Length: 301
Ligand SMILES: [Ca+2]
Ligand SMILES: [Ca+2]
Image 1: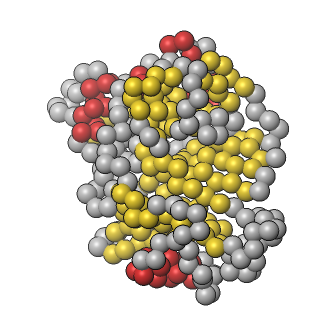
Image 2: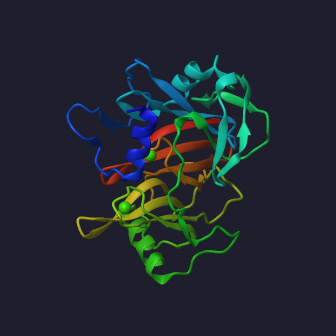
């Protein structure tokens, strides 16, 4: 059985465990793995590039071998694709999926001094979004996240239940009397267990005129509310809390995309984060009942 078929079966059956044994013992075993800059079996491996054109860089890659598929970092992806660009075609997968628009890589650019995992990419068309190589033979055919509240300048979600949930979570992070401002909220089944999770993005900054200084009570938080063993659990994705201990500049996050980047049936969160003089794209992967950052690219001034 070809790896292409294996991938399709894996996605169609929405695997929820990390190991899927297909058919009899004579058939291959499909294993999924996740970690950053992972050690890789080089045998017959191919790496499907994942590019974030908002940042203008390789975000990482989906590595496919006869026995595994998993995410790898930008450096490893760049090394693999740098002399194969004529054979690579990309589709836009998020925020708007557009399978018709085929894109080609026309060149690479060097990173500036204050960049992390930055491998700049030039394309033949000016498209904004997350692009994935088409040779992975999977499509993110999951239901799109349901927008409970869409981002609107100066307007916040007034749902009393989720305002209380957010306030209670902020209190656990040392924000005693939080001013709750929910910027965006989405519902989706991240891990394919049949139950939706809710992701909340909330922030309050008393005074943004000096973005290098936080005031007590300032915060920005992205968290996921998930049912774990019949009980709700709030899981921190990214956060900054001016609670007397955590200091820093104003940092803002956008839930840029929710997408299964490597086709293992679990959706990754792609956050865009910015500080006054820098911005990053970060990928968080659901692992058990938590989320771990697995990829990051970006630069500061
Ligand atoms: Ca779920
Ligand atoms: Ca995934």
